[in-house]
Length: 470
Length: 96
Image (cartoon, rainbow over all chains, first blue to last red; front, side, top):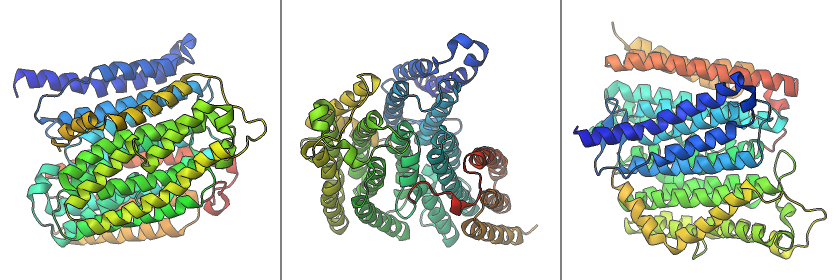
């Protein structure tokens, strides 16, 4: 490794290390200096902004760090920038309305930054075992974050997430054990070279895929999603939808592309079909806005799995899809946060007449819904278009036909939200908070959803350049 | 020493623990079955792992299992004080 690459690697690695340091600062400093209580959010936000500034244009090569455990490449830089940006917006939303009691110390930000640290490690992981450890570092803080309000819905969400998540982790470990019996080297690059797996290793792969499908929320491993999204603090639901799913998708793609054909492909095919169909049908019946967004997040995981079948072009679409989906999701959850009064968030009818009382908020929410539904010229349309066209071009017409039909079905429930806002009379006493950090987030996301659609070419070029390094 | 009997034990333990996890209704028992599943997987890694690295994986997995037990117990304590029960069937505030 020459000096330039070493300099880049140490610069890039200082980002996550700084994040860890900031997490402990948020946790410990207010314990010693009482004057600093209540400023943990500002500390966390400034640390994330500093970490974002550490992201530099990566040299066009793959740098293997820590004996291959982490791979730094333009792809990792792209995904890290994405994660840190999402994290910054989540912290902004948490500043607007803190999910935990203000005197509860910095554990909320500590857990959030630790989860982000796990996520960036997961995205750059070079072997399956590192990916598993990173997944645990991501999941354990999230279990606690889901229940951080210690209210009944929050704790129920946390326990469901914990039990099913830990069950998924145990299955992943067993899968790694089975795979390890025949493949001593668990690096993704080595697994690619290993050729067709024996039955034992195949069983291992199936278990590992099941474990990661739990985190990515593919049907039939999605049972926890609606309850957790509904009971967890809205900021955390937004983080789970926007960022955590991305981590699972990256690892599933790394496993998916090991197999050109064979049973694992079939497995992914069925996962994609069942997810897309079941999630969209289940979403039709929802009345709670947070549950609706939860099922929508499951459905979008299905579209991402469809995009896998487009090969390299499909993965370019995935890398474009992730930020586009994240913007619409964070924006929609921010609107939920502004409107929510109880712990479980508003129902769809609470949005009635929003267009009259808060026209700009309603317009932004409509933009998010149309982007999620895939209406041109919003970014969500181009994301779906790139994803589906890549899959068609590699000959998976039946799969894409199912996805397109179900995407049309999804119009119904996204439109229901818009209809409630624009066509129904306002409910009495429909008020919401004063302008603040949440509104800033909402309008930034709305602008992003529109701009990433209108200027889809440059963003896609960026995503394509990153996808080449997987 | 032949590793296969050990591997067979770990599979049986894993299957039994998974079945117990899915059928029992108490949160504490579910957590214990989870730990059993992780330990069974750990035995499988030690028994089948062909390399020193696999034995190191097992050590790291101890830490993961301990962290998981820590978070799980903390959650169970918080739930016991909020819900006054630890039977899963009595905890359904959210539509399941």
